[in-house]
Image (cartoon, rainbow, N blue to C red; front, side, top):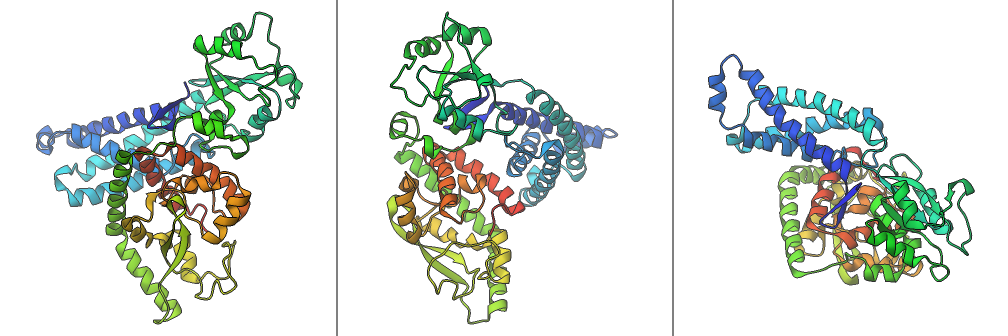
Length: 467
């Protein structure tokens, strides 16, 4: 099985196993580093104290740093060299974090020599493991063998949208099966002939793990009995939209129909989940303010130096929040004070309204920091769909189906769409981002919020999507 579901979020199984293995490597590296550092006098090692909790702590910090740098993304397209560059940056980030934590909590201190040796050993062991991983996983290890039922428009979507090697890292597409009466869109060489002994026997013979139902019209010649036989015999049967959700982390709008939303799992709300999320929002916002207040103070000074002492530092703007209710969002001002004298408009590439300070703070998302106040007030969550302006929402809701469903949860400072899609500045971009927002609305959980928060570090460091 190429994916497992943890707290409703799809996790690529090979990368989960890779993370567990690398976590063990980091723990082992602490032991090896400690013995190499103190091999001449093991009594000093005894004075250091128990290594096991320190090894777990070191492993956890480095794993979080690697997750923040996007090293465990199944769809990463940079190859082994790009991954190792990210890994090196992860170790630098992790080592910096460890230094700060040791300063605050001296009882966790391991020693600079031990940390340096452990980091060096870990990097080379991870490099070797990653090389083996990419060699094996890119062949056929742990991939699902998928058969598509259908050869029409819906089936062709799979070929059109999953085009790269990273898109198909979790499965092997064995072929397509035509349903009688269907208008064939798939190339003939990809369409398989099912023998007279039936669909299950064919799947059993070919080692098929999963059947993706992508039939254009189920009212005509739909092989329900054969699918039921496959399902009861242990072969997974999923709808094409569920398949896309799992493989791409988004809900495809043009395949979406209300019955799938009604009968699929997810879209759950309960008071316990809401309470945990609220506690997470307050804790994350308070921690961010504690870390970022010097940067916020410098931003205030920079804006004043550029635009004058009388210039406004903050601006507030009406946005649409939970259940369509409007609220004022707070930001550092990054545009001229007369930027919207002609009315509301999308930010553009190389927008002339943006100030010099504004360009910098938008690149590294500093302009969003005052939204901590919105989170503490309860208007926003720390993680959620980005809130849009009422002027845009009314039009977008009329032209994009299901657009209002993104308001089923609180908007956030960061979100799943911000990780997966670049800056949106058009109706088409809004439709694309909505697909990721719907995935979040359907599958949101505390674990997914933590994952998004960690991976937002990568967005900030690499300036992804900034405009």
